[in-house]
Length: 449
Image (cartoon, helix red, strand yellow):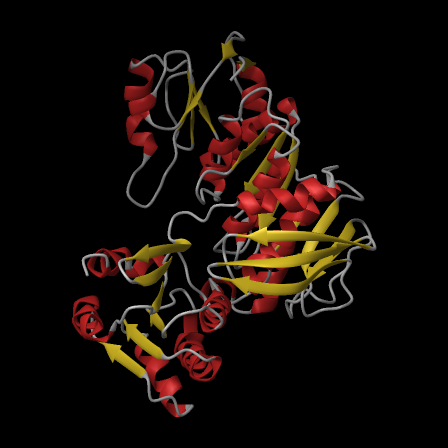
């Protein structure tokens, strides 16, 4: 990055620099990647404490350090929270570069919407995006601090898992456009209720200027009636016909879909290489962000076709004589239902759902897993295979709904042993579960067939 005054950086971090002013061209949080003359920020995580490396940072040439621990060296500036200090520095640089920013949050579809919005904006602007799903305080800060000086647009993902986290992220990102994809029950153990989660997600507004567009999914039961007189609220949806931005004429084709976007009295055809209403809704939000920032609607709709799924997010793999849908990055009740519904509409000899646990659901975990099993029973799939301790509830829910094709296995190995005898040419296998269930191990076994 272009050099910034140490005094300005200290002020942004909530610290005080008492030495002579000097330019700083790099912010570092890892001594293994440290460059001489940088500002080292000592972060603390579950398995590390950067404060243990302050001496190493200084010996390697760090010009200054931000620390929450007291330290005798005058080059070390004390603060209350180094993560918030890093956010402050990132927010300062965001304002220096002044790109147009789209910020995306929500319980489901954040990363897909971010990727699609980046495709749309890249059609007209030099655009950067949050890499992968690095969406917490450190990930957001790192994305902004690594932003090229000539960036014209940035699509930033804001992720939270507890109360009080959204406001500092939103103030750092200072979105010109905000997107809320929906309110589910992920992390409900930390929030207590969906209403509390809704309030926290909607704090994205705290970083937005008056009259800025806030794009919300009005198909979601927690958002359909939301309004904010200070902002320009744009509602999008498929089922809700009162939206300003609507999805219509959705048709699945193979592993993708075609649809039409209704916006300001006109229709725009669009296509995606992934199937399902949930993906088309994410595309709708991305389109809305683009046109709100001046992208030509025809160009915005066309850019959606270049979206590429990645990282086990509904990636379609044709393997030998059957099809696998890798959807193992994350899972919650809403995305599980969306996946099952999409699978039921896919062409294939048989549609086989292979599901594992949904994590972080708190006291509702048993109830929600049974409900997904009940949904699978009537959705139109042929076989439901489940693995994981909580996944037993899928089988129970499906059986209670009268579905005879649901089976639970204690572990991935026993599931795979049965799958070898079950799978036939032409079958479609949709593999989905929370990231912590490590279903990539099962995928490796499947690809050995």
